[in-house]
Amino acid sequence: MMFYMPAKVYEEKNAVLNHAGEIKGVGTKALIVTGKNSAKACGALSDITKALSDTPFVVFDEIEENPSIETVMKAREIGVSENVDFVIGIGGGSPMDAAKAIALMICNGERDESLLYDKSAETKALPVVAVPTTCGTGSEVTGASVLTIHEKRTKAGIPHKIFPVLSLVDAKYLRSASLDIIKNTSVDALAHLVESVINSHASPFSLMCAENGLAMWSRVKEPLITGNITDADYDFLMHSSVLAGMAIAHAGTSIPHGLSYAVTYELGVPHGRACGIFLANYLKAARANGLENEVDVVLALLGFSSEDHLSEFMDMLFGKTEISKEILENAALKLSENKAKLAYSPFAVNYEMLCEIAGVGDGSV
Ligand SMILES: [Fe+2]
Image (cartoon, rainbow, N blue to C red; front, side, top):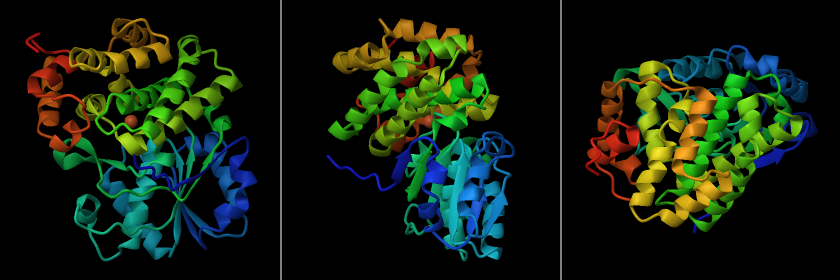
């Protein structure tokens, strides 16, 4: 077992203001990376600027959902010209993932965007501080940064592992998020939990995080359906998301994430919802391939009686997601060529099985 989670994480009420001194200690001038609205609306941006007090900062608030390489490069220019020496990502996965890629590019001012996906290059990046405002990505405790590659019409994680040095987690930032965002991001966390258990890289540490996270997630099923979410539920949502992040920091994500990227790119289906579509079939495939015990543990911790019960829950949460056969087959084909991603599946998968998990198989596997 290997355990490496170098982010110092504070998960508590008023985490940002309570640890202002540590945030200021990370550098002398900050680039704050956010989306257009949510960091402002939830109060996280004003908490961070208060915490920074006399430490100078520049705000880049142009991170879009599923951030592109182009946006990362635009922020890099600003960071370099402003001479910043640390990056603060505030928001959901998009701003936090972008913050990591921007921190990498600022630190390597002589390199062009090819560095982002250069597997052989050394990873040197400015320190990153993360403040999550949604409950799904786990980016505050992972080294992952997923960007959109328009050229390839999909999303892909960069090979550089860039963990935040400091993460300030406070569930109060979830209160201003729409129910749609809470649903979509919490199902992303659910996918992280499930995929890190049904995973060839699972270890006692990642399982400890995932199993605890699954039990916690089971408590928010009803509130997610009814929309009646209490402060205690927000704590459960945020905490399960952090645990899910720690689990994937060690195990990685697997087939449902791999299938989701093309669906998100082609149809704009939000990331969490897109992953959730494939979870029940992934569990069915795992059961058919000798992983009954693991599947039963996942379902029991979540309080579902079967894979179909999980599938019905997803339909109740989101309604049916209509996706054409062509897009699903294409997602399966793209993933079948991605050997690195397939290696996270604890059972052998080929194109036919990926079609089955995508719901467009012919029943032959
Ligand atoms: Fe995810």
